[in-house]
Structure formats: C-alpha cells, structure tokens
Image 1 (cartoon, one colour):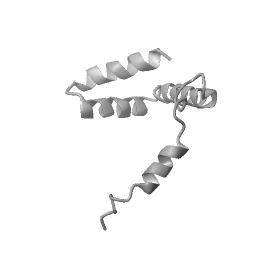
Image 2 (tube, helix red, strand yellow; image 1 turned 135 degrees about the vertical axis):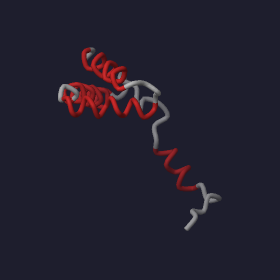
Image 3 (cartoon, helix red, strand yellow; image 1 turned 120 degrees about the vertical axis):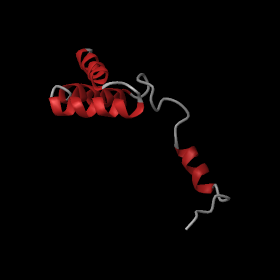
Image 4 (cartoon, helix red, strand yellow; image 1 turned 30 degrees about the horizontal axis):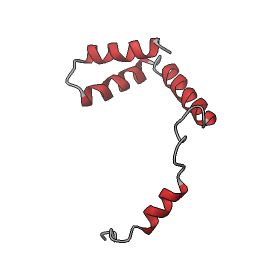
Length: 82
C-alpha cells in the first residue's frame, strides 16, 4: 500500500507541534544535554570491553575503507577522550 503523499496535513500538524528552536540547544534543553552526556559516558565505558570495541571498529570499517587496526585505533582514541 502506497501512502497518500498529496495529503500533508499530518506532516504540517507535526511541524506545528515541534518547537522552532532549542530542541538540541544545551542552554534551552538542559535535560536532553545531560541525557546525551550520559549516553556518551556509557558508550565510552562499554568500549572498554574488547568485544564491544571490536564491534565499533567494524561499524567504522563498514563506512570507511580502513584496516581493522586503523579502526581499532580510532575507537581507542575516542574512548580515551572520555
């Protein structure tokens, strides 16, 4: 079944309900900023597990033509920054 793309009322209504600014602004939406910080901290913590470290390296390798050692290096640098 193909959706009716000529009827944009639902899309327009969703636009009206979305704030014009501040959705990702850390000053206007502090709770979201803190939540994303927690996500980053948890990700860095999980990357200490060699299996998860390899998983992230393989994710990088899917989108970049790099060796596994180069990708592991990127993951290790990233986790050392947090």
